[in-house]
Length: 187
Image (cartoon, rainbow, N blue to C red):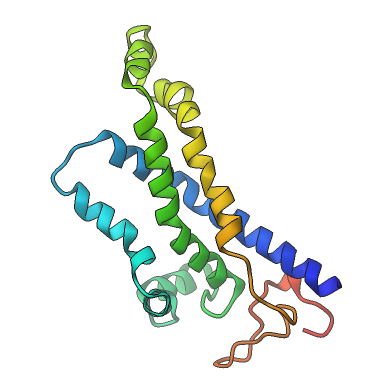
């Protein structure tokens, strides 16, 4: 029973952490996609949607190549921060963030598109600055679309560890995937 609660705690922390990781970037990109009309907007939308349409194995291999010790991001993170990403709880966090980023962008974009532009114009004519309009008019009115991410997150990304996360070790390296503060006595 104790291991089950640890798995639930790990799942909740990963979902919360990845939500916080992608929230500022995804919200900004969703706002940009909803409010601008540039020629290459469809290219950005396609790149953002790629993790949803690629097979999960392909997405995983791309992440492994990027965040591996010899990959560009993995080597940079190791050189600057001195930490590994692959085969750790950080990899679970990154994978969850990558897979949920398109969902956040899509739902937040719909939320931003639903905001009546006249309300933003009224706030501007009353003397509100651009940032004040964003934070007091646009984001509160689009909040439903932005916060849908959390419901989607907790529905789509449960961690599958039926025997406890510290007993499930990577076949390649034999290391525990769970973070150090999460390990049980037997792990």
